[in-house]
Image (cartoon, rainbow, N blue to C red):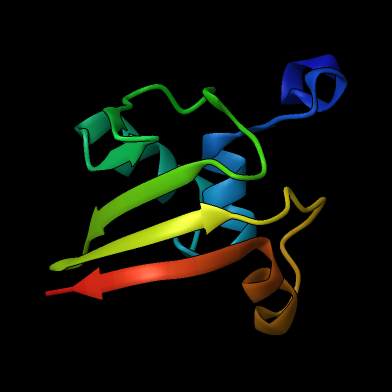
Length: 95
C-alpha cells in the first residue's frame, strides 16, 4: 500500500524499528520517535511516518544506550531475531 511507502521504495520509520526488533512494539517505537530520541541521517526526527530507505543511518537513543544503525533492508514483517538482524548493520553502541 502506498501509505506504507512501498510505492516509493521506503518504509515508515516506526514499522522499520519494530520489524528490526529495536523496540518491542510499534506503539513504543512511535512514543520514542515522538519524544525525540531518534535521528535519521543525522537529522532529528519526531514523525513516525518518515520513510526510511536502504542506506539510511538511524541513531536510536533508548534504555540508556545509543545505537547507530544503517538500514540494510526494509523487511515485510516482524520475524525472528535472526531475520531482524538482516535488516540493519550495527555501526556502534554506547552507554
